[in-house]
Image 1 (cartoon, rainbow, N blue to C red):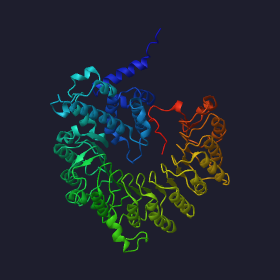
Image 2: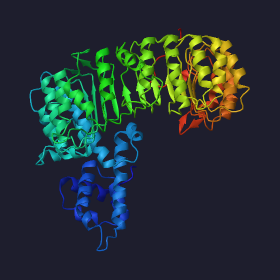
Image 3: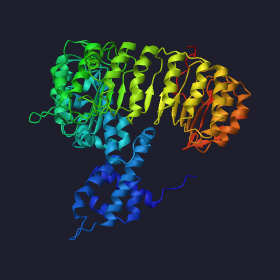
Image 4: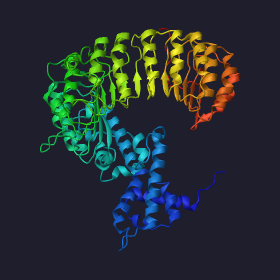
Length: 605
């Protein structure tokens, strides 16, 4: 026999319905006793909760007495409102909750809701059969039901099912949005006229009309917008000029954009003789510009060279420059020729990129001559901390060109910390020279990656010595260590009392049982070790009995141990699945592989 609903439940349901129908009960609800008010909050759908909070916001001017003392009861109720919004957000988007910390949950709820509405509208507007106004697009019942929409509300004065209603009522809460090209017309700028956007991501922008509609939206949000990103777009010089022009206030020759990104896009002119004037002005006047990204755009040498030279003369406090995955061979040849006549090893001179902390130029087909030009360019980056030059065939000659910079940077106490040299066609000779040089520094690197270079087991001795420095993150995946290499590594670290290592990637090295022996020794000597990737090392069944005791001993700090692709004994490792760090399992085996992880690649060099 089903339990009959309590009188309190029936009353709460009636109050909820009345709130959705009208405003008559609002004054009464605001004066409810705290325990009843709190129960009601947890039962209200978003539309009703929104109406209640708006009424409370309106009356908040009476929250203080004549001497400015706050009403503690009202402050507590506003706090409970935030908890109610968080509960509604978690109920609707449980997978997104952890992405938001210390936020206004009412704001983030309606922002995410509006994003869902815009995504649905884009799917409808892209259909060939669509021939109407964007604001008249009907929002599906599956979305409306989430906010408390009921059938009787169809007779209301406003049409809750139209996109225009959601933009008008909830556009105010939008701070970060993603817009597809199909909804980037002039009508969108009108629909979102109440928004105060801080971040905007644009997809598939191609036509002149789309650029025009976008520019109106940018102009509306010029005072608040700080991040702008283009993905899968096709842009001409004229389009770039128009976009950059809409970001500048007429009376002030500058803009407030902090993060600007164009990725996985195409330019009509990939290797122009000159940059679009609007882009030059944008880069030159961007005093707030912190991050600039042009990646996966098939850009050529001329474009990269002109962007770099423009930045050298700009007054921005640029922190991150990402030119990865283009084809910019020779982009610094003129720079190196100009610098070679001066003092190329004098750190911090000139006007160039003084504030740059991160430089990402991976995947650009750069060679050893480009590495020489880079050495001269980095002289003018005294605050550089991270350099990623992976996936470029710079070879050992490139390393020899860069070594003088690294040496002087260390002597000058430069903040340089992280170096990525993955898949750079390096030989064992070049890498040993590099590692031995770093091992002598008073202030060693924090992070080094030499993954995917065919080095062999003989590099292990130098790596073992390097591990005894203060290195915290090391990636030596797929360098061909084999069993002899892991044996040498184990012998080297056995002579060290304590390692500073926090993360290490030794995957795809075919180390067999020697991998397990090395890991067992490593875990005992690296108390701060948090992450280990030892996947695809052909470890046999016996390795399970070597690893298990060490893993249990390190379970207090170890957060991730990836052992996929090894033939480990399920029964021996069964108890390890119970070990957790920050509420998540530590161990990853093939049998526990999440569905989101891609299938492994072959580890052949």
